[in-house]
Image (cartoon, rainbow, N blue to C red; front, side, top):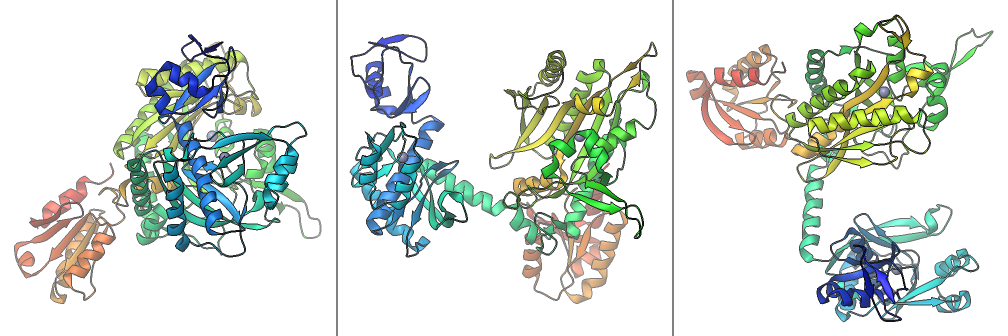
Length: 638
Ligand SMILES: [Zn+2]
Ligand SMILES: [Zn+2]
């Protein structure tokens, strides 16, 4: 019989051949590298039989799918080890995750991370034995017999449909109810590590029995595990929640509410600086700043469509617009987006084609209801400030406007040293607007992005229901990608709010509307920036630019004089007055990530200098005070 290979060629194989046989018939190298296969697009074990005419693909350890299969197989190995070490354990589910795997166990005694060494040692023995994962298709009755003492498995067997195939996988003494596929043998697991233990509920339902979930990760090669662990350590060091606390950037308080960061003076300073920097850039680029309220009547949200489509993400409440005797309650909603406000501002006057484009920007604070499990420091909060703007323009201006936005995005990303890439999301199944509008809009976005030479991918069907968009992702110093800027075309709001402009022949036309936010959320951008720089913000953005450190109390006055001169040029400075040893003060300034440390003693006062230490370069020797002032002056936002 014949099977079809990915390149379209056909290969003759013997009756009863398996995926492994197909791999072997192609080459010995491929047979060795094979982890599993795909038959007609579906992942299967290497031992799966192929049919005449099947499309067969061999999956090797180079692919992400193979890594997922390795990790899931490692979950079996871990469950096997736990079953040996904790007799009577009830096994639940053990899937792979994005960066590893877990398995849930029901057990009267508590497993702790102290047990990890023993479990890992047992797992190593199992991997060493290199036994195969053997698939077996069984009847419901057989399955119930096999798992007679495993209550979760028995419950799960009842979930199978009448004529659904039930497969089990045996590995050594261990057997699991599983659809597969798995590695050919456990020996292919090159390296693994147990990471943590947490509580979980059977089937994720808090009404159900509580289980113990052990998380682990696994790789084909030890060096990949080492790199992963190193990256985790790096990420932990850079965690903006930890640095945010240490640097006095922000705090959270349960009394205030979940996902509502509160900015301490250093954080507020940095956020204002980011805004100031961008504001100047925006004024230079023909944007006009506007300010809109935080709440609107529900009517606005009904007109915009948010009331229907975005309701569960919004906060609604009532205001009595009558009197105590005759209450008249109006429903209001807190803004989750700034767009309707900018649309209303546009509609305040009649616009001519000659005025276009009109570009409104606002540092608009918005509130969105995120699930409490989803909030994460500054990265995902319920309240945040967007560097939001809306461009209203004629059709013949769209490409130029998108180009201008991409140029500004490039300016921002290079200022902060981010590499970036883009994605264009196209028309989803449920959407409004004509085919012609969508094709036009998508081609405008593509034209602009290609003209600008930004690498991009297409995300088919991932646009908003009201228009296509460009998403820009930035890559941080340790290789993680963060979604940042978006540029979005909108056919919806101009229609819903009946927006128009007057054309040359005095008829009315709908303007095109672009939404764009480049930092995205300013606070989130700060979070990314803190992780990217490990809190070492550049001189122009550092909340405190210089620490003046007097050597002894008699140098305090001179220290304060220098600080006053720095403040005089709008520099941000602190005097370290405490009577502490010099090394303690320097360690404090280092920990606070202050870019410049200015040490003042007898010699410096006499010479009109400071002894300069920089955050990155250490001791720079004696430098005239004027030079320091000039460096700070040069770093001023302009
Ligand atoms: Zn499995
Ligand atoms: Zn918008």
